[in-house]
Image 1 (cartoon, helix red, strand yellow):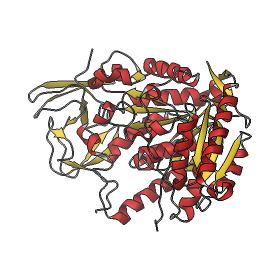
Image 2 (cartoon, helix red, strand yellow):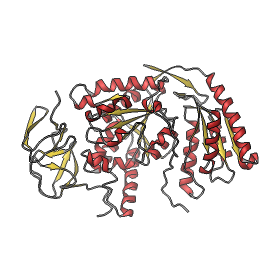
Image 3 (cartoon, rainbow over the protein chains, first blue to last red):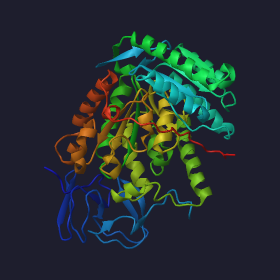
Length: 95
Length: 398
């Protein structure tokens, strides 16, 4: 069956949508016997990420068990995580 | 598992059997096109943009690349073309390529006296080489004779779960059998370099990985830019990739899981079996040129579902002009099912929960062996057009 979303590593605080998901959808991702459920605060397009937990300002966004950037504002569980609210820490010749 | 290939005099095995026209510099591109038009199918002009206003390491790298193209096992014979005032000597280049034991000719305007003589003699040589190449027979070879290049593009978040682990699965099988595999794109190690370094065969190789990324990072700092919008690209961002770290962590899945034997400079030849990384550009025409020069016989190109997956040939389609490196296209997103006639392997079944990475990996390996045995890949069946290959340049231009 086609999953709605996927959690890749147990350390991750974001999941990736495998379908176009709608605000208000309740999404459960499972990994190694643990289920994490989130109610989406926003529409999440296929392939995009949403927060599984609240992520505080300047806290790392974790996917594949690795930091993929820092939150540039407080992110609530269920919110879309993308270039509007997280920032890369690498390749930043501008900083 | 076997494929049917052509044994070359230097002991390598080709999966194609082409006559290559290799300009020593871009000024000879025109003559290469004329000769290819006259000599017809099977004779390929490897057009490129090497000028005579590059210096030092850029000229050395270009010479290494052009020599590597001639040595590539898919080349049966080569004609090196020059003006006579090229920054890379056509005569020296031909001598380097002839060390492979393959038939090689060299023609320059300076030596022949004029353009028309180069074209007429070149056409005669090319026709003869093409005829001679048809007498070579394919013979069976095991996986240990394969040298696979892996690349991803049009990436989105499905790439990390579909095409890239599938390519990595095939890389592991080929490496385990005693073959070789190579990946590149230094900018796409940024944020994942520590993971690749952990897989290095020795501490020295681990340091080379970190040094390559540090050099790339310094170039970004020196330019004073944020690479967002370049890495990840605008298309990657549409597909849900937010940072270079996220892109890199997905991209390295295509390198499989085996130890990394060494880091090669751009365009260097594969020195042996196992897995290698080439320190080079993530720009497709430059990256593919470096990998073709490494001696790889086939490249897999894994796509997400981004707009580049709607191309019928290849994005940055100089690969259409690189017939010496046949490309197998894999696609990861179920959203591009309408395009499947233009892909060799569908990995979206993993995203749909219908197949495992093992299942699709098996299909990919089967396709690699089929294409290695002469089956044209989808890119090879697409209409070809001539585009100029690009040298990766890190120094100044005058």
